[in-house]
Image (cartoon, rainbow, N blue to C red; front, side):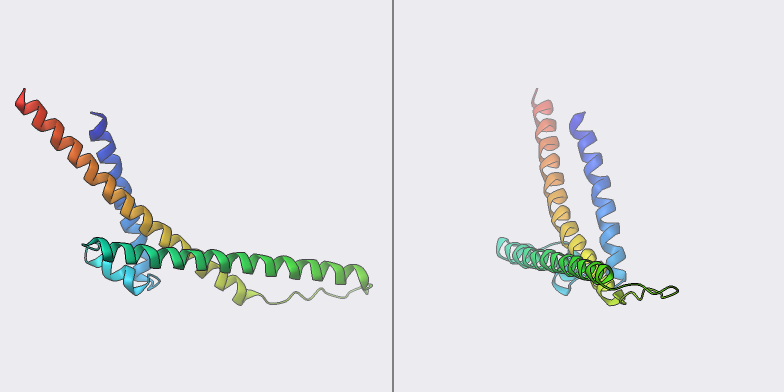
Length: 148
């Protein structure tokens, strides 16, 4: 009974992960190598699986480093603007001119999406393995029930 519930939950998780990935696939934000393995139903041998996982890990690390760099850059700019505001007198009616950091914000969002895609593919691999294990347990239990 418990395995059946776990299997149903695993199937639902798989459905939502595939939907999540499909959205970004439609937006053409999924890396080509991930897209190939996704459309083929996953890599079939250990070497290919490992290579995909290492490439995904490297992309994930690069995305995390880039996000950290953007965050630090924003903090430095904020401190610099605050120090400049404290050191210079403000005239009446003078408007504060903020730097246009739209491009930086866009880069941060795209990097966050890239990181989320990496994590989604990792989760997809784990959910598929979990389903395989649950099917194995279910099959083994049905064999034992039949033997008794």
